[in-house]
Image (cartoon, rainbow, N blue to C red; front, side, top):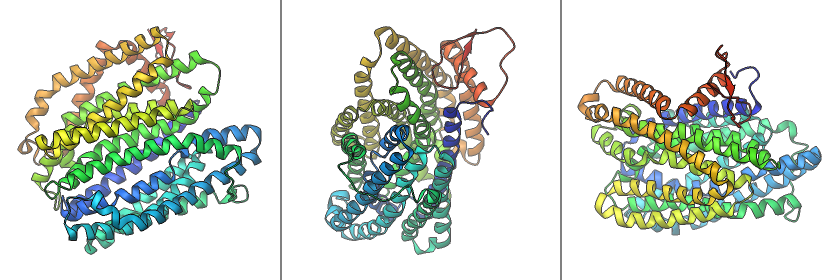
Length: 536
């Protein structure tokens, strides 16, 4: 429950983070179930590669959908009827696009198999193709549901949109439990079943607007022209994200059986933290950010962006360090049961340590990308995505012969940091030199606090990284390690970044509805709406 008097943005963030956290936790449970039943097997490798084409279809069909929010809001300022008319045209466009891409994917799937799984034998490719065809049904149902969910986000109906994601996870989990004896096909069909449930929830939520949200196809209308102009670079950039994923799994198909699934299991915690925190935070922030950039107060715009970058660093950099330090007990807790044995845990944890730095890079990439998009600049993130693809391919070719599947994890992480560096370098022109120096100083102070935490706790983490040391005490190891990390980071932040410590402590008190300290304070500028920080 949010505090009384909290701003709409804070309330939206709490709702979105809560629903996303629930969906991600359920996703973790589903992934743990997959590990329990299928381990790091050839079947699981086939399933993960079969997901590539349907995931690409689903993502491309709704790429640029976030542009719906500012366009719908701008039209709504003029007329409610005009806004819903534009919404009908945009949703129709995305649904038709989904249908066309699905048909194209179904037709080209056989020819795509040698590219997606070049290291698989004939039997492996045939199994992958069969799973791909099933999962294309998931792309149809889940893709349509998430397109409709964009309309719910534009209306700030975050609870219903989040509930649809939760129901997707619950339904697919129930299906796996009921039909796991069928084999890996049960996992594929569970995604189809969950996608149908999500589509049903979103469709029912929009049922009261059925007279306003009418189908229409008009590429010449002003909202559609602007949508296509803004979305084309995003299509190319998002295609780059999928190309990166395809590159990684294609290279992994040449490695021994289980490499694809080991890498994916290792990436689950990184992806889950990103979805639960970064994506949900920036999804809730984007409508407010777009509104802020539409105003003429550039000083407020820069101050808000600067604080958002510093706050993201204060949250995601220590999370990166914690996952790196606690990789072994984290993997053991999530996956080690049933078919997933100690060897699988050790292999997956070693990959997770190489993936862990991606948590910070993913969060900052998303924040800076959202800032560019809110300024209606979709070209810059597109070029940064292309640079990431080129670096990823080059690094895979250089590192895999030396590090094996670990080289795949490291190359993905390094390529993300190359993209982040490019976005940060191009974004520097938004700030005045003094503002940029102040922001960099605060980020450096937070990094010093994280470094101090790692230096203090690394010996304990190294001692406990032995599987024998955590055998039978995984939950206790994680709880103790997490508590020590929190205490050490809090103390280090207080020592190295006192101002940010006070700012975020005050923001946390306000968000939780706790009373302010009785002592006399003076306000410190904190431009994020609805959070008034104080410092001594």
